[in-house]
Amino acid sequence: MTSASYIFLAGASRGVGREIAQYLRAQQLKVKALLRTAAVATELEAMGIEVVLGDALNVGDVERAIQTDQPIHTVISTIGGLPSDVERPDYPGNRNLIDAAVKAGVQKFILVSSIGAGNSVVAASPQVLEVLGKVLAEKDKAEQHLIASGLTYTIIRPGGLKSEPATGNGVLTEDPHIIGSINRADVAQLVGRSLNSDRANNKILSAVDRNMLFGQREFAEFSLE
Image (spheres, one colour):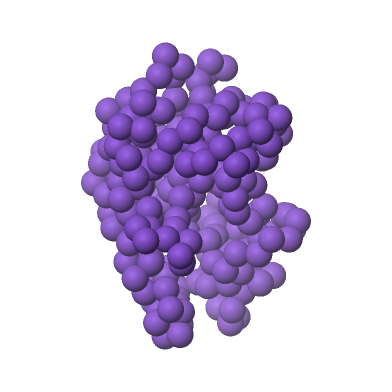
């Protein structure tokens, strides 16, 4: 990454996206965040983040945000819908971001998905699938669109998310059977470390806290170094 290039972050208003924004700024990286509403714009700008208002569900908004004079090195997306949303952005919003990234010649795309999507459906309980099955299917479609796009990608699928401080025990694995919880701040660290990791290129990785596994299953941790 050159000093002039930006990280483009979609989903920075809350949750994992907000934690990633804080982590990237702590690393002195230039960040541009796409926000649907101006509600948290002031907070992000106070962190030194450039804010652009737009809706990921609007192709024009996304293309205008990504195709700028400033080169975008990596797009990171954590966008996902709320249960109250009429139209969830999990697939269509990410599809727009992926397509715009291809057009703009972006180097890399990091998609934060979820355990239970794609081949990690084997890790999810019947109860989880009953509640979140439709959402996970949308996330799987977003993953497949990214893989087919030709972009260099990293897909990170966190387990159950918690809002506690980072433990430093967040780990990645290529084993789709692993499930557990992880703090959002630890997901942010793993995403941030994936930015400049060639080992993470074109990988699909589950993210859990090694001390918060559901069931004691042996698995191989994935090293980003």
